[in-house]
Amino acid sequence: MNIALIGSGGREHALCQKIFESKLSNNIICIPGNAGTAKIATNIDINFLDFQTLLKTVKFYKIDLVVVGPEEPLVRGIVDFLIRHKIKVFGPNKFAAKLEGSKAFMKDICKKNNIPTARYKICKNIKDVKNFIKKSKFPLVVKADGLAAGKGVTICKTEKKILDVSDKIFKGKFKSSNKLVLEEFLKGEEASYFLIVDKNKFRFFGSAQDHKRVGEGDVGPNTGGMGAYSPAPLINRKLEKKIINRIVKPTLGALKRKKKQYTGFLYVGLMIKNNEPYLIEYNVRMGDPECQVIIPKLKTDILKIFYNVVENKLNQTTIRWKNTKCMTVVLCSKGYPNKYIKNKTIYNLENIKLNKNSFVYHAGTKFIGDNLVSNGGRVLNITSSGSNFKKIRNNIFKIIKKINWRYGYFRKDIGWRVI
Ligand code: AMP
Ligand code: GLY
Image (cartoon, rainbow, N blue to C red):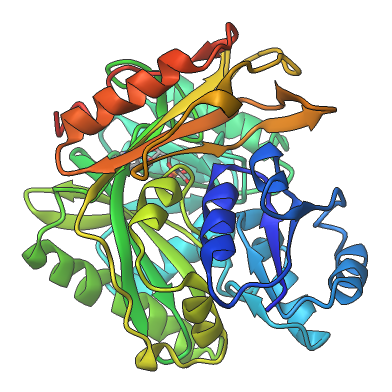
């Protein structure tokens, strides 16, 4: 099969590597890809949100299957568009993608189906916000309704802060949102649970915990994720049953009743309190960097899985996993998630000899000539597997030490809960 993979992060390099290893893969194009994918696929630098140009490219390269990494094209309807043009594509349709694209939509599904989640109010103006504040205790969480590149959620401890943040959203801070969700703060431990879904069936696709804050000890501003590990030890059999029966099945059932069945990866973002799961968010894709710790454990041919999902034959597919633990540490540009410099050469990465349990996934990287340079906030994902998280992390540190890049920063406490 010829494959087009959309996206340019560490998640896409991990997917690309697995697709490259598949017995079923022929040519792979990445749109736009990064320096890591450039070594195993052809990077095509077009804007994937320009669907007409994308379609032309897909036809030109005789693509058999398009795999979509990030949320934005999904929320904008890339799947519906490609299917209309008879192109096979892995990912959810535009309606189902609202699970991530609109927090109000997701919350309404929770309410109608009794799915455990934080008590909330969809607010269209400041009056709505003030009414909810009257009935609630602080802290409260303000969430822009639409996609906000990870910057749409603010935990507020005072009324003033809530009103400030809300006002900015109503005034158009995020183009995607003219309303917001105001909700109760849930105390507990976060975990992410992943599924792969077709029209008839869903299957487990790993669990993970990530570290969203930039600083050690989980402090400082939110990022896309500074590191992750899998499995999430928090998720035991009993809890998994609750997640499936109380959260996943009611959600997929609600979409099915609307004849808008979900297909693709589904990322269930949870808060676990006293062994009870509460839904914080849905993402309609794999996580980044969670994907980088789940994909290395996959034994079954990934293209066989994708193809069977697209054909709605997931019930005939067994997904097998290696019985190992996996961790990734993100090496980012100093200053991220605020201002940082790009285009700084990363030395020596190419010379490092990795054992079969380790991998460096690229994210914000590109080649200028033969020179590997940084090209974004999150730059490399140093990933390793094994049976003991502490040993795995030490192995990761050894690899990072060999990379010669003065402009990088990484957290040394990834996985502190399990180490
Ligand atoms: P989201 O964009 O919905 O994933 O939110 C980003 C992060 O904010 C989550 O990963 C949580 O750490 C935190 N968060 C969101 N909603 C809540 C909530 N109701 N209670 C506590 N923390 C929350
Ligand atoms: N690592 C969080 C996310 O992918 O949304």
